[in-house]
Image (cartoon, rainbow, N blue to C red; front, side, top):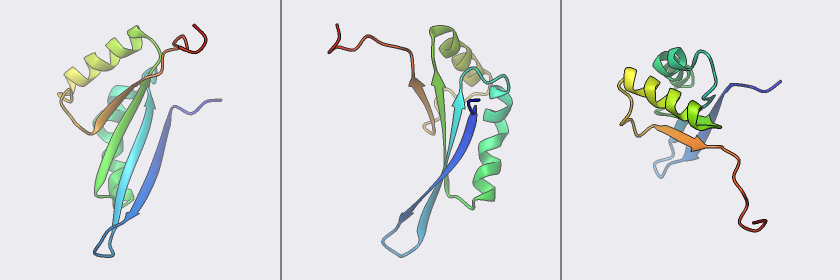
Length: 98
């Protein structure tokens, strides 16, 4: 069974001795609740972890998934959000095997 979401907490020491907490939320573009999760879930994780920052990482495996994600981001007015990262996970021919 593969997970469709994971919340990861990264803690980095800061010069003043405090900690920088960042929530990184990983999503599959195929997740049927992607739109709902993008709208609300990361903020819930961020608050629960007392984190200053949040990143939403979305993996897509084909062009149809990319188009779906782009449409969702448009509806939610998140297309220019620098905290949302799309990762192209499509299979590619390796240059060393070509």
